[in-house]
Amino acid sequence: MDRFKTAGFFRRYFAQVLDTFINMSVSIVPFFVLVFSAVATYIKSPMELNPLSLVLPIVLLFLMPIFIFFYSWYFTHKFGGTVGKLLFGLRIVDENGVYIDKATAFWRITVGYTISSGFLGLGYLWAFRKKEDLTWHDRFFGTKVLTVGKPIWGIAALVLFKILFIVLLVNFLTGVLPQFLSIPSIVPALELGYTQPAL
Image (cartoon, rainbow, N blue to C red; front, side, top):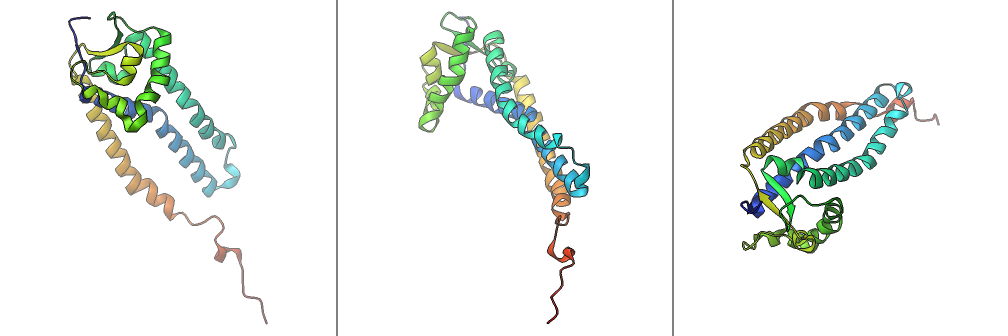
């Protein structure tokens, strides 16, 4: 892969943004759907609430980060990058130009990303050094990100996700949230039949 150039900061950044949208779509969105569904069911009819519907969001909250990690780790060493990077025409390789092994992928994602995220993300901004476009985690683990194709599919996917996010946000703010806030309190004080005791 010597004929390919290293990827610059902005292309890597937008690939990461796309990965964030993808991760959110498979973790945060289902979590909130389950939570609002459980709350709505409880307010409507507490007796109909399945206890499992309270457990599922919590389980999902703990399992999704694990799933996302293993997905990122597997795709990085198997295909040279996560879906966001692949769609932006990027590949992560070692110093010999081949996909990194399982151990390197593991330490790059865990220790490497942690180091680069420290100091206000200075490790990522290090890619602005145009000589090699390498971040700290690239330097520590002997990796580099190459541009092997055009970013058109990544740009299209990013635009699609942003449009979808805006549509869902508008629908939430104009539909779901007002309905949720308009539901009367479960045990409002005036509905308890409380009256001022006679003197």
